[in-house]
Image 1: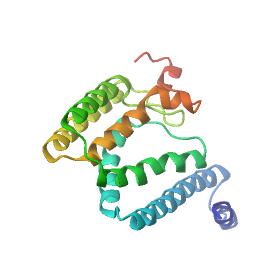
Image 2: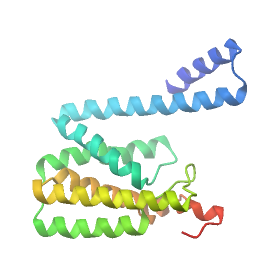
Image 3: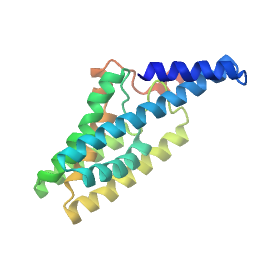
Length: 196
């Protein structure tokens, strides 16, 4: 269905005569990204409605978007892998957060692991979006660690399983292990002759 919609839209753009081929490719790329985002969000929204985790789903969207915007992380190459991995975050995390209670020792252990992960690997760029500016990488690292520390306070003070699961998930998505498992290049800025 996606290909049919995009093909029809591309034909319409070509017939309009207002765009060259390069501009049409850019527009189609953007429209496809929006289409994928909207359809997956609707799918995950429906699943969470059935699971009774709508509030947790929206909280996940909000808090995960913040930490991910600074720490970046793994992106799947195929749509199928993307939807499977996204399901862990958008469905499993809200569901588990509603029922799982973690001990203080468990929280502290995983907060320390997450902090170490963020210090070592954040921001984790991708082949399509390498972070080549050393200054930007440093700003993103500092921002992601600050967000992690703020989340840690909320986790301890308000007993938030959701935020802890978000940090665990994001620690996995910025780790070199994810990139290795899916045969994806890691630390892409090194391809530009930059050391750190």
